[in-house]
Length: 293
Image 1 (spheres, helix red, strand yellow):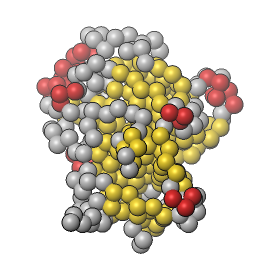
Image 2 (spheres, rainbow, N blue to C red):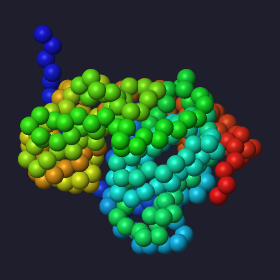
Image 3 (tube, rainbow, N blue to C red):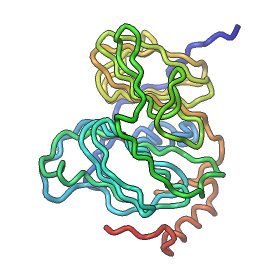
Image 4 (cartoon, rainbow, N blue to C red):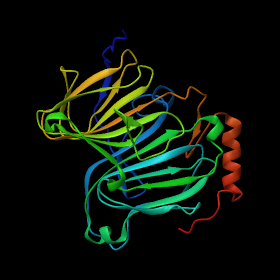
């Protein structure tokens, strides 16, 4: 009979000094800030905009037109509203509880701003942006866009009214997530009520991490992890426990490493330096299309 060994914590990271991406995203970087892209593969970048109040403005804040190639960008909205457009025709608005999953792949231009109407009143803003690596065979595939509204996200109620698991990607106990992925990835928002405890398990070789979006928790019965902190697990087991000290929202990430060379520079993540050079050349010669500022 196979035994399910507990997975230990490799490190807990507090949020570092925030920086602005454009003028609309005030973020703490956890990946690759806490570990290398190779160690966190397939999760190669994580910027976390912890709760921040943006004042009202008639000119929406955000990030202007910029390129991407070789990976996917995933934006998870917790507070506030973001409008997105890209040169492949993708676009839309995401609000609280929604997810935007853009496959840049062979190359897109895109821009992201606070939604115009939301900007006029301002308010509390909280988002995660994650870059998910693509296998070499898919890096030059056609761009695509998945707009995932909260109503489309599978929600599983935990026993004893402990809370809810929202399955963004992958599966939780046979319940599949809304997003399609190119490599095996599990992505959940776990919402636990005060005092509730749950056990999660993933294959031991999967890169696994938690972000405490709301509330404080105790992980593996002994380690207190405050709000806005990031937990990275070792690859020495499968299961771990999370207990909510107060009402909590936890972003759970677990994915199979792609285990291919990573060559990254700016907005491009490829496998070789030659491919990076080609990406810059293609961008500079207009092969990523056109998107109005």
